[in-house]
Each structure stands twice: as structure tokens, then as C-alpha cells.
Length: 246
Image 1 (cartoon, rainbow, N blue to C red):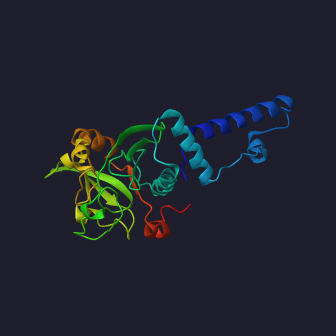
Image 2: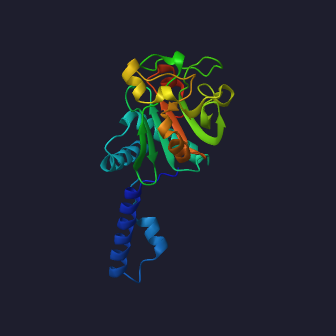
Image 3: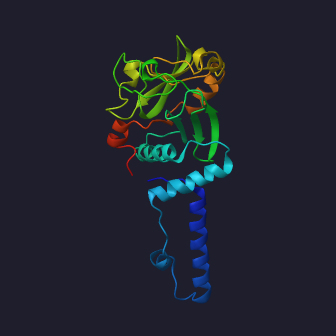
């Protein structure tokens, strides 16, 4: 598993180098590099410990983050997709549908530099709920949002202007994204001003629609095989998704 936690690696490398130098200086005729590799104890972290440490790094560099639960789930799926060589761009987008549509509930995370690149409101499907997203589906014409993990694809220009295909990675929960044309696009009803007049963000036909002023930057940032995770407290997903299990 390719876990890119810079601080952990730096500490381990420094520890190994320090140990090597100490032993060699004291017993230069006795120690070889292979001996050191066998005898030096390198502490290992559990996946949960790694994710907690990464979350701390993000917290130190950014003022707003998704909550720890959605971040942990997002990282578990990110690691699995990375191991399958499906991730070409080190970016994880988390949409937290436990939050009101009046809140900024989407974060675009730069995994290599532990930075939040974008933080925005995002819409959910018309039949998924009003202010809050509560009902989800992978069914064609359901007009509902689909939970889980996606890998971003290619762009196209359609009825909503510049748009981005996303491919669902979970058979039960989002595998029909292409068939349903669940894509990333901009929409007037996803603009923050819409909240002032309606009391909540507008709703899509199942797409995670974003503010029109953000559309191009958002799509250009995440297109080309990055990871999107749509989070919820939905019990069916939490109990049955293999992606969020360590």
C-alpha cells in the first residue's frame, strides 16, 4: 500500500540513518548494510494511525477540513484505488452529505502537499432530499444522488456546459453513473446566492453540481483519474461498502 505520509517517512529515514552512523562509528569492522537492515527495528503504523497522522498534517496547514470520519473513509478508499493503479492524480475530493446544502460540504484535497485546494457548496439530487441529503440510489431515472467512490474521467461540453464524467467504483452503490449521466457540472441553482432566496441550495437530477464560477477550476483540478468520495450516514452503505473497511 502506497501511503504517502511525508513526516513518517522522514522520521523513519532519520532514525535509520542515525542508528547506522552510530553502529558503524563504534564497530566499523563488524557491521554491514545488510546486517543493519536485518537488525534495525522500524516501527510500523496501522492504517488508522497513518490516517490520523495525515489528518493532523492537513489540520496544521488548513483552516477547514472534512470531519475525521469522512476523511478516514475517504482515505481507506483512496488507498485501495491507488493499490489498483487507478489513481493518476494525487487528489481526493470529499463531499459530506451529512451536512446541510447551505454549508460548504465539498473539499478538494491535494494529497502530496496536504493542502485544501477548493472548498465549496455542492448540490444533491432532487429526490435525495430537501436541505439535507437522506435518500440515495444507483437506479436510472431515480433523480437521486449515489454514494461512495468514483474515479474522475474525461470532460465534455453538454447541456450544462463544461462537464466531467465520473466512474462509480462500487457495483451496488454507484456503478451506473455513466448510464445515468451523473457527472460534475456547474449550475445556477448551485450558486450560493440561491440559498438566500430559497433557504437551501438547488437540487440536480443526481449530479454533484457546483457553483458556475467554480466549474472550470474544479473540473480542471480533478479530471484525469483522481478520487471522489461521497459520504453519508446511510446505514446500508456503511454496513455493506467494502471500500471503507480497513
